[in-house]
Length: 485
Length: 139
Image 1 (cartoon, rainbow over the protein chains, first blue to last red):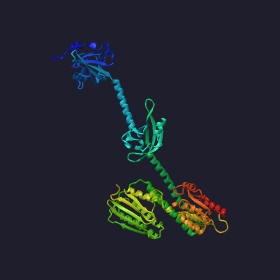
Image 2: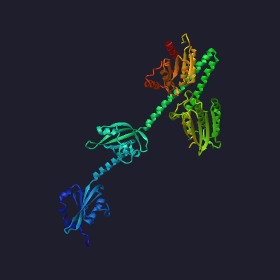
Image 3: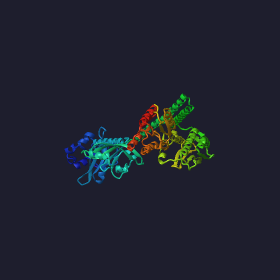
Image 4: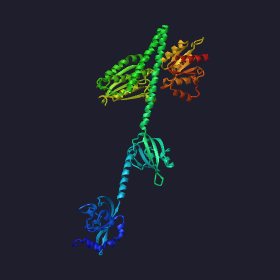
């Protein structure tokens, strides 16, 4: 065309009123406008005029969007271009500036010769729906966040025991992917569990609870308390069951520790009771001696008292040592020197018992960092035990011997105490480092190895034992040369 | 309480604690009994066969269940089962607990119960009463 047609000429061609059906389109609850190729509004229905004002001949992009140029993705433009209907979703602003979310549908209007002279645009206001949609989305997001942050493992199981939904914690601990079978994922079973609170909830539509042991994806066992509840659809049918599992592993572990503490207290009472027995006995016998002027009784009785006082002292020192949490001062410890001192201490006792006490000490060993007294205590414990093992061994064919070796291995000092005495069976070896366990009856405090292990661990080292019943045992201690890490 | 007239009754004290053996032996000797001691089940069996005691006091809390084994052995022997045995029990603590004692009875119902119990800490009067009662009755 040489010049763009005027609004009036187009309107005349179209006989718009007739086209738009007069009142019908005026009353529909959406906005209808008709634009020409220049995006000028040729006609608008009443609703549009009410909310947006009288804007005939103005550009639609100005009226609806406050723009000074056409919108980039304009369905009206597209319809003019390809003669097809188009749909899009837009936001338009009414005369008060309020935004309306709308679905827009455009249709071409043809002139008498079949050319497109105008495009009808129909706006369906979906503001309310949009608002609801947003609120729903927010709700879901919030719900999902709560679901994820709940400090429990939450999972939703279908009737086949597949996990159809799970919270973040569950995914992190058990399975990131959904759809697997719960009994495979955290029970490592090939078929459903015999006693299952999920199955129970499906069966009777009620909540159930259980205490279980499950296995996480790192292979660790966890104690959990499990609650299940049915999930129903709008018709009331149970579609899934939700399971919430709370981790009580730590609590159970604390319970175990508490029980151990109880046993410990019992052990202490027992040990003290034995010492008391000895003290009373000593007092009784000594009193007999004083009464009858019997020297033998006085000596025996008094010896019993002294012995048991010593035992009590040793026991209390050991207990205090075990109870204290402390890190050793980093003093230089010359291991060869300390070892020789211990060997000297035990020399007489070894000779009396007929046990050969031998040593191989590497004198070029660099100093350790730690508490000299503790290291002395550690080696004394091991040597004392080794001597006892030889002494209680009643095998006369053996020549009892304890060998102490001190040497360097890379960045560690190694202390090895080996005896060829009674040896230990599996069961004894297992209980070795527990408190108040002693194979020596009355003469053991039961704390020696516990103290030894504490010293070793405070110095950043390791202690291990190798033993064959009737052949002997070897205790190996390794301590880092630079001191504890 | 002193022993009745006649040959002195012999009592064997079995306990792994040497001081308990000393104490009990001396206590019994002071009260007219002859006493010997043994530190474990093995020594106890040797002493029983050697000395034929009239009564045995037995510590159940000795290591390796030595006391329990000894008790079962003598109760299984016709020549020894009639010697009265008094258990000396520590009621709490490791070994010789009341649980051990109860278990002992529940698993071996054919082993007869002992003739007496003395709880630790040892009360000398209780020891003498129990021993006296048992030896008078069997004497």
